[in-house]
Image (cartoon, rainbow, N blue to C red; front, side, top):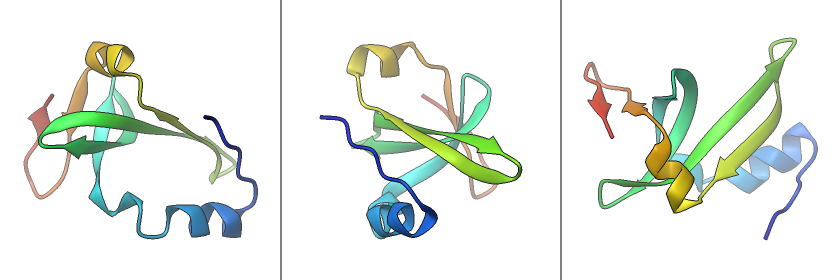
Length: 82
């Protein structure tokens, strides 16, 4: 099921509390966020930025595509490749 949410307040309300488990990452060399379950990527969240604003957010949960990505988790002074 795909949904579309428009507007900064609506997007913020949708993600409130839901993205806390997401980790900052480089996905195929591009900044993104990754949600992991038991150490395995379950969702890749990518952002389109225009004029210093996020204009589009895409969430990919397809296991075959997730497996094909080069994912490098970022944070707390260390990096980790998935």
